[in-house]
Image (cartoon, chains in turn yellow, cyan):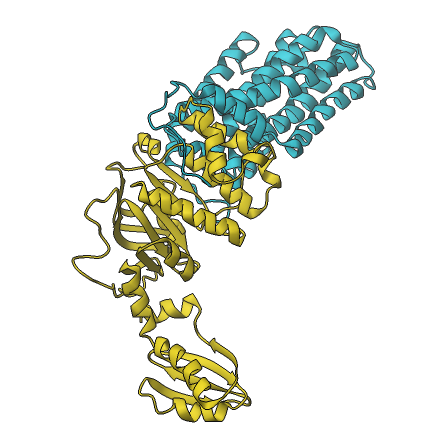
Length: 321
Length: 256
């Protein structure tokens, strides 16, 4: 097995990977498939409210969520949900629901039939609960349409409805905003926030930093199957902001702008291109404020300001360096 | 969107068998699968027509064609399509978590899926086998053909449900069981034939069909009622295996 080296954890008071009132506890969890390590000695916990699970594609977020949901077998370590091992005690599913990332939905079923089925399995006799869940995700009017004919976003919302109908105390959402249009995305974010505010444990994964920022105050960052960082969103954002970054600035008089920028202590290098300047900085936030101000003062017209390495992958790489 | 309106602690039903069976019939047998099931059923009827070409009495001709063609090929294939559809295909598709992540007991999931599969077989395969006897001009053998097909379906669906719980490539393993284990090894080894739905369902058919030539009856394996008991035991063991295995499944999802 190629186990990556230990990673740094953004720490605040106590151990930021753990919460006091945990409903989900993961201890030294490891999962591997053949030679590939999907999760390595992961330890963290989740409590009421929304926790964002952040990491680049292939980081191990889905494996962690499936382990929490009891779908994946741990090779080492333990997972406890509401005090129970989900692999051993099926009763835990009375309070645990998962919305997987997969687009797959049962063929031939309408949205209402699928949600009804899940409700039936959970012994929910209240028939209005199904319509309630569909209303919650905005699918009541298309509830009698087959889910296999739905768009990706609608399928995802159907799965959210199927999860909500069980009234779960712990809700695990794997990339739930994938495929949703901006309006639905906003509504789903509001919905998840409300669920968190109701005291439910909501675990939301995403590889999009901004999504997690909008959703969760507490964030767990997973990279290479390991815990890379944990804590408040602000602490992690600060850690990421402090890393060196390169920003391309295109302007009509970019030479004057470059000359003005180079005097700042947080500018480590300035590289001149054919019609632009690439600024390396240790404080991207300061640069973002300075560029428009300087451009205004110098009378330079900005055409483009674009970070060259602002993908989440590069942020994560920097974070775990 | 509004906050969830579900009432916590709503009345909980004691058994989930009915919704699982209903779901199995609706979701596990989509239109494409139905077509896949109807093709072997049509094949059974075609074998009935083929019996008309055999120069013998109608009953003997049908017995010959049914023993090898229908019970040796059509019934296992149709049952494989049905048995794989009710569980293995869903696990591969990544939609089984809707069922798995519920407080329902595993035996209810397994038995519900098995009942669903058997019901599908009873309305497709069993009538097709009986119809084949009529088409072949041997209506007296229709009951035996239906009985053999019914017990073959019951046991085969259980076998394929168990395979779905054990192997990732359930359809491939199911084919291997039918053709390599049952057909090849079962032909040579009586011990395997005694546990084989193919051979035992054939034995049920031959025991109750009229005018069956002695050359078709295989020695060393239970016939008639004995074969029914044997298939019932095979079914129970396979369902037990599936119930034991299902909680140990690793559901990696369709993407994996």
